Image (cartoon, rainbow, N blue to C red; front, side):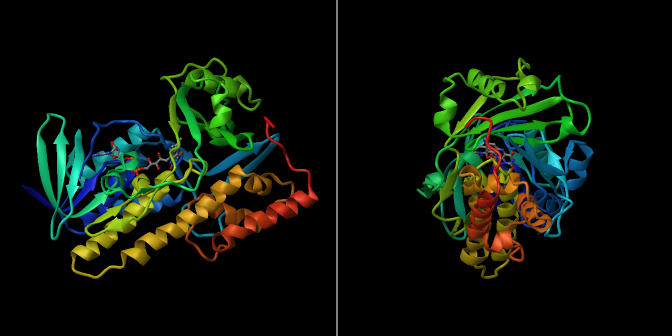
Length: 415
Ligand SMILES: Cc1cc2nc3c(=O)[nH]c(=O)nc-3n(C[C@H](O)[C@H](O)[C@H](O)COP(=O)(O)OP(=O)(O)OC[C@H]3O[C@@H](n4cnc5c(N)ncnc54)[C@H](O)[C@@H]3O)c2cc1C
């Protein structure tokens, strides 16, 4: 039976970052991945905090060589009002830019890099069972040839994304407090893309307070276009995803001209009720990272950042445990990650109930508050010196009430 120190399930951003960090510590590590690469997963808008993790994993030189469209900020629009955040003007010291990435290509580069670092990946190898044990757990893997293999590992990192292998096998999936939302998205030929900055800037447009449209231009002329939000509204446009997406975008004055009749590269895809959580993030001999452990909402592009944050932390703690240290998974992993998730959850909820939109689109913009919010959007959600981290549950609602009492705030395209 094959034996390794660490077995990583899944070769997405969380799996490759975790494996690279384990490998650097001199431990043996292997990745098993269900699909063959390149494969597409949604998640194309990154936020600056991921750069810290890619640097730590040694991926940055290879990522730089890809010359993807750089992302220096994020902008949002409601009615006629734009609100733009510039990552170079942040409260927390950190990365001031990142990329907007074609995900299939991006994940392929990460997988190639981790293999160059000496981590073997078995593609088309699906984990179908795990028997936990000490000092070794045994993972059953089914290869595409039909061959079944058992792998002994001292530690398992579940980075299986939407596969959620350990939460499913061990009954750890839990309902999320967020209401179900729906997304329809596609890649299209953006032949009417404006020249210059307007053409490559990433944009999120409020269509209705609880429905928004994303526009993520890549530097190959292709743009990712998506609509996200309340399923009852999106379902009004029928069950054909292409018809629904085209109708919603056609009714939106911001992008109707640019995207009317554009050629879609594939049939638009639909994801529904994608928010997920687990009863626990770790257990004896394993840790769950990335989307497998928690996913909130796409609105602030935090998915890959949480994937790599959890991966980096779990990998470092697994290394210490395997080297004989006592590690406190409950406090130093689960509680720490939950603090960041809770901060983002507040901003996701207050986006959809409109309070955060009041703050973004108010005529009065306090520069210090803007810098603090920019750091949240950049992913620096563990900096307790930032009042919008420390008092995340209350500040945005206090501000929203104040702004509502003072100003007439912009309304969405569709009431
Ligand atoms: C509509 C929508 C839009 C989004 N937009 C963004 C965005 O703009 N920016 C952002 O940062 N995030 C975004 N996300 C979130 C993003 O998709 C994820 O957070 C991110 O891909 C998580 O990475 P991961 O490494 O955890 O998992 P993945 O990237 O999903 O990788 C997991 C891997 O595990 C493999 N796997 C699964 N099951 C098994 C098994 N049994 N055995 C072996 N391998 C297995 C899979 O094949 C896959 O390759 C979005 C999500 C949604 C729903």
